[in-house]
Length: 150
Image (cartoon, rainbow, N blue to C red; front, side, top):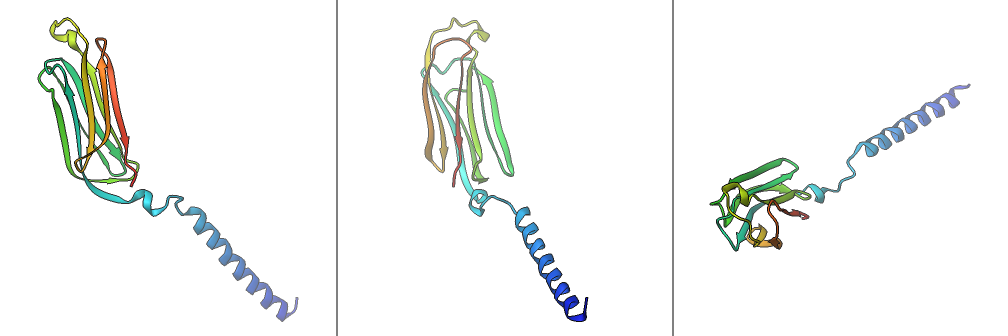
């Protein structure tokens, strides 16, 4: 190889090295667009109203997402209507919110009779998920979920 060919070879080697570096960097970057991880500050509330407020039940709510895991759990015959607020929460898109209600009427010796509940999830005061159901049998479990999409 003469001196001219060696220069061309070195130049080509530099270009190929640069190209490989660019490809590696773009392959390692996240496929998520910036919007999917946008963080917003919101007020979140979970509510349940019942046609019979003295029923023994197990209620839980949870918020799970990037950088946040919070929740509440209550087991009682005195927590209906149920309301739990989480104010000023920094949440990302794809954060999951879940509200669960499980009847346990027999725990206090009460004979079961069907009753109705309405479950709500609100974001900044606006209802984003709602479910109205009749608890038709003892031990019945109902859940309401919502996924935030900014």
